[in-house]
Image (cartoon, rainbow, N blue to C red; front, side, top):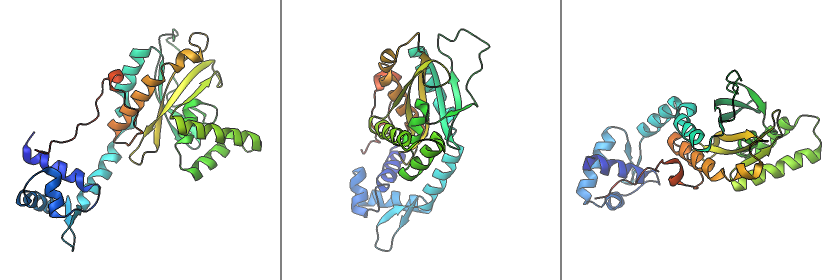
Amino acid sequence: MSQSVDRALTLLGSLGDGPVTLEQAAGSIGVHKSTALRLLRTLEEHGFVHRLSDRRYRLGGRVLSLAQRALQEIDVRQVAAPYLAALNERCGCTVQLAVLQDDEVLYLDELAGRWSTDPGRPTRIGRRASAAGTAIGRVLLAGLPPTGATASSATATGAAASGAAADTLAAELAAVRHRGWAAESAEHREAVTCVAAPVAGSDGRAVAACAISAPADRMPSAELLRLVPELLCTAEAVSLAYGGSPTPRWCENRCGARPAARASRT
């Protein structure tokens, strides 16, 4: 890597924590002030850095513009695809990716497990399911802001749901939020066991969820739960590839991905 590019990118990363003085900028990349000043001026000319009236430097508007364009062009299904394929190959279970849309689960992708012997069986891709009644749906509901989670939970349980049912769901979502994953056992239309985990966006909240499932008569819940570390590792890898901020549960020996290394400061 070019040393100048390395230093400039490291400097931009440090500005992400807030405005800095020239001295602080130089210290963040371990160079003399004159070298840091040249880098800052070059970045300023391209709009990546803005010089404040108090002579401190902050990120410029060009950074935000590029970030917004990048986020608009990112397809979470495309980003997740290689990680889901690797998980499917390792565990042999059916693997799914879904998002929350109109208070329902919308399945974006699915890879059949080794027990799916019927080649004509339709996939869940494009299909919808109950958010409250599925593990993948509860993970997505648990990832909503408190107000949104309450409203979506009420819709998901139905207008006629009793207060007790709503309270039970609220307690379950709190538990899911705490442990970082959800499970179900033959609760939905098919007799399956399933565990699901969130894919985090840039604000740390769930933008999607991935799940692994298997027929309940082939893989009991206790056996499937042993695959939770595999699932969490994959969910975190997808989150990082998507540019999100997942809760640290890194398990790099499983999925083979690696978090981005810090740039050198020499």
